[in-house]
Image 1: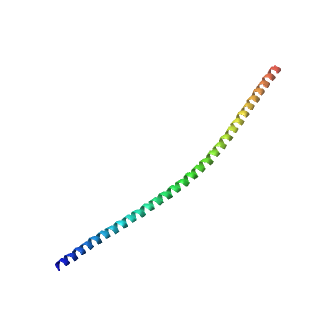
Image 2: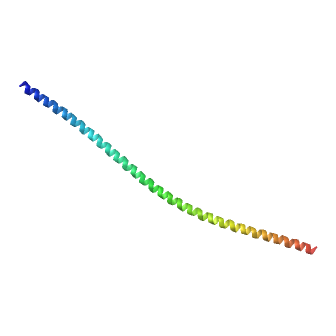
Image 3: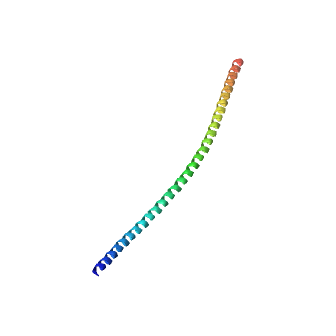
Length: 111
């Protein structure tokens, strides 16, 4: 009878060891599941941020294009204004020269 008692005790000990191992395995599985969920959440947040940054970049590029178009138009207008100013200055200089020549000619004629 003591042999069967030892067998029962050995089986009980083995069951206890297996239960402890199962418990530890379940705890490890829960911990790993939490890590997976945290990693998934982190990845989703990173993907959202990448999407937001991509959209921000696209909007910035569109804004840059508009600003460059406005700059090109402003530079074109500036060039036209500078040409008009140069032309006006030439006409003014020509008129002044003509006036001076006429005035000088008139002085010589009256003398």
